[in-house]
Image 1: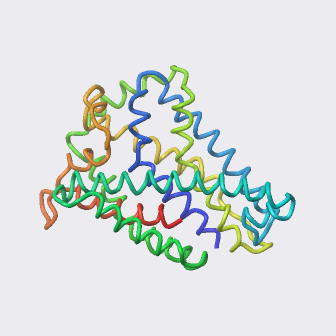
Image 2: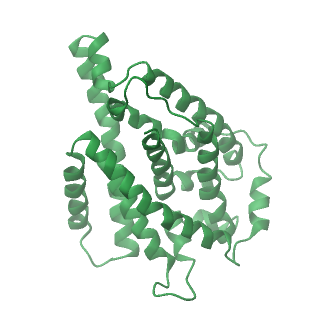
Amino acid sequence: MYRYFYYHVFYIGMMNVMLFVPHILIKHRFDGAVSGILAGIVIGTVLTIGTVYCYRQFPELGLPEILKRYFPDWIVAALLYLSCLLWLAGGVLGSYTFAQTMGLFFNPDMNHYQFLLLIIVSSVFAGSRSTRTIQFANEILFWLCLPLLLFILFKAITSPYLSWDAIRIVAGYVAGPPSLTVLAASTFFYTGYLNLTLFNRLYPAAFRIKHLWSIPLLGAFLAFVSFFIPIGLHGTIGVEQYIYLWSVTADSMSLKYGFIQRILFIFLIMFTLLSLMFMMN
């Protein structure tokens, strides 16, 4: 059952690739991004393991139930409203980015507000299901996304236009100290553990999350791939020109043989599934 925990960690890491995290790291590629990613591996791993250990002390309880056990109602209400605002900000950012990306790259003639309303209605409907139903939906959507992700990464790494020299040049700036912005962005790849605030309700007393050693490997893989592949494809200077960095990166690759020529279409399908997972949770 511990696999459900890793679904959250992995899909949040993949979702950050679609959002502005790579763009933030790219802006600081010459002044601390590489060292920030390395520091983020340590910080993200410590936060993940610490959070898992804390929630393991409260089996079958989510954050609202834990707070109600130890604090008066007014403190619980204030903390939960604050938590709701933070989650709402993430959902708004995800839905807006998704609507903008689909409008720019897929259907520019469609009204953005109508498309955004469609996404919000779908997300609200999906998020209103029971916690266990959403857990099962996460598993289905995750296995639909994973082959698409692996295919896109395979095409990117094997692309003849990927410049390993550009990657080596940026990797050489590892000595620069990271800023707080870079550290925040680099640790965001690991924030899937925050979903324990609700999904811990489904884990019994004897539950143990195994293979925690894979957390730094998974986070490092997603961080370095999302950071270095656009640099290799767009160059050390040209890569800074794009905001929706991975959408442009996917559009720079093509299939020579096949009924889908542009990798962007595959990327947008994966982006759609990940956005629904992100906003649903």
